[in-house]
Image 1: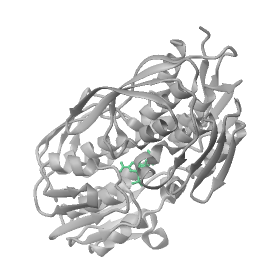
Image 2 (image 1 turned 90 degrees about the horizontal axis):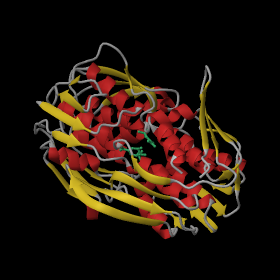
Image 3 (image 1 turned 90 degrees about the vertical axis):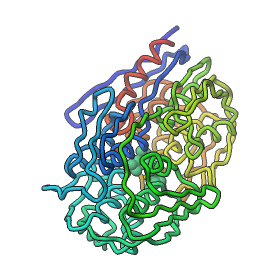
Length: 450
Ligand SMILES: O=C(O)C1=C[C@@H](OP(=O)(O)O)[C@@H](O)[C@H](O)C1
Ligand SMILES: C=C(OP(=O)(O)O)C(=O)O
């Protein structure tokens, strides 16, 4: 079988990834293991850092974002072993005992690090903190967490009335509130719950649609006094109880698995098994959407590991149909919309994505960037204020495209390139290391086996 040519070109300022499928086509075959779930990795490091005693983490994601979390919480006094070890050990400071760092806390590119950490800092009395991030993170909205924290009594200052990092925080004793969040965001929910751990009384968050519930599951495992009512999209935590270190096993990240699910679905003759994928129902929107599109995906070997459901996912190529992606499914597939847009470009009919305006405030404006980049490859895409309209089915052409320093865009474009005619060059492809540092090597080996 001919192989796709995947090459990497490192220049002084960027990494370029070149993907050129053979003229005779390509079929992806074999088994793939994806790295640990990013959301669970952040939470394991953070809860381990504020718990008393030792937490062990197996399967931690070694991407740039969890590294930012580890860097910040080391500066706040937690002892965290080398992340590259098979089992990472965190010796926590105990609740309410984070130390005032000597320097600015830098969350890098990671919205989850900054927003969740803010809840913990705001509720840490008698300490001063300065927090920032990279250029992208400094442009992302922070008022969504600063406002509810202020309602709890937090003292936070920042650019544009505290809506943009860098932010300054003077930790103080907070009071519990009931917060009805206008957006379905696990970062908002988790920030408030983490602040609630140290607040007086009960802190409740009600969401308009259910977002990922990893914080709820992990807080319970660490011994927090937490009650979740998913039907009512409501969760409460009572302040004052201690957290105890525990052992966490991180499943593979469904957001990373999504690239291979779509790759095998769109490349004729493919069959892949993606092993050990976290299939928490608050994250499986991508599987529901792909099922609506007629993708052939089977769950094998279903099990529960450390409180999270896990399965191996077998995917075979099929002809995809268009579908509508809107409403409550959007928060359950929020990071997978860029790769679902790629699937839509290969599906027959018009796929409409609505209610996805949140994508405009991720690492890049993912609606605008995906519309521009897929159009460069010859797809028929119209950008809408809250989504995309994609008329699928016309063949894509290799092109010069750019990730805009957004990891999900870099990887989505690389997968689109597997079924495009000619060579695609993805500029700023190094962004993939934020959530999937082994993406390029797995891409190479999946293509080599074909
Ligand atoms: O809580 C989390 O771990 C995350 C929540 C989501 O963000 P929002 O809460 O902003 O939707 C998601 O996009 C992000 O990649 C990770
Ligand atoms: C949006 C993402 O992450 P964060 O908000 O943590 O930067 C993502 O991983 O796609």
